[in-house]
Image 1 (cartoon, helix red, strand yellow):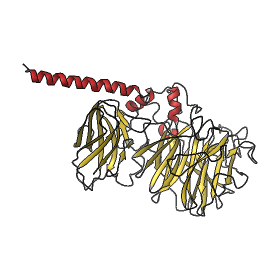
Image 2: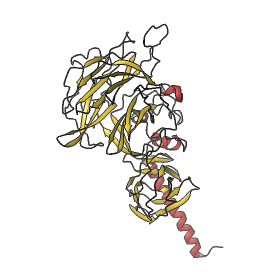
Image 3: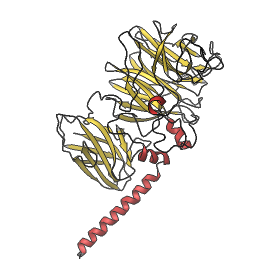
Image 4: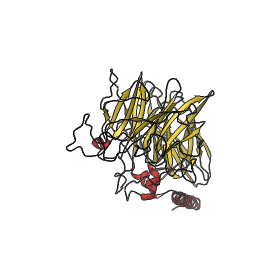
Length: 496
């Protein structure tokens, strides 16, 4: 039999557990049905790095390499999915924000939040939508400036500017940069999908357009133009690019002294068609020139439609970039929508793979895999790490302010290849107040059964918690699992 003290202890423990459960139910109520659905079902194998980001739908990636960090800007398909819950195909009409992520190692990504681009709450209030961004930086007057171009559905292209890769972004024009009625725009069926290049001499160039009517072999609906020195105006009338079988998705790269214009081919049936070149449907084709404004000559195609590799066919959209001397391709694929139970399609996820270039400068057919790319450096735990930094997660919800919350006890954040070479014996956790408390565990190498490196008990309303940390072997990289229990909301963590 229990004595009175033991009975009180059991009673107090039961009361505490009841309070934590009540707090969890209140906390979960703030999250949407889609966020909970993604937390439970959007998963990838531990050996896979694709999709690069799981907790949001992301499409049409644009990549900026700045200060040894890769930033990726994506059409926010999550916005559409919140509206439809996958009961109808993605129609894109609700999307007026962009998602932003960053990484120093290409496998662990930090959610940097959204950019409110269009609509009443956006920087460009004249615009309705924000699709298919393009991004670049340029030093103007001794200061780095950032330029974000976006498509207002298929009717115009806007530009936003900022002093930081993550904003805040503002609208310097108060209107579209490229719009209907401008010279040499009449043949552009879809006025969208921008790409941008800042050349070695600092001059900027914009590429855009797409679509076709009856003439689908040579629709002649792509355009390029030089930009003004401030990057927010056109320095010449748009120039036609005759891209065979063009559909959408302009891309531009300079490798050596050659400019590569790339694009997605159209879906028109090829039955009975005589053409040279003959291109498959919805692949990434490319053209080359020795001049940024062309003329461009057809050279081949380099990326199959993701449906060929992953099973779900859809539009193809890409961005080729170079980081630490190696080439990569970012693109999207409809790889998770069925996994989480969507009835309809068109909801896309971000993918990254290596990009090969032959010695003669040609682009071969690329490999598109779930395995993804190699980690380019060990992850640094000795800086403040935002909670929404991960290779993947399970039963974790990322809030709109990029905090993380456990959907179920033991929900985890997985960070790949952590470098503990500096040792460290203290772990500092920042938490959001207003919660009933719980437990945070740090484990090495394995989920649940890994070596426990730290365990912190979180009291109600705690916002800063410090606990002892036992680093694992320091001569190799380790995978890290951060497990959350109870009613806690993690803001960031740091090892010291």
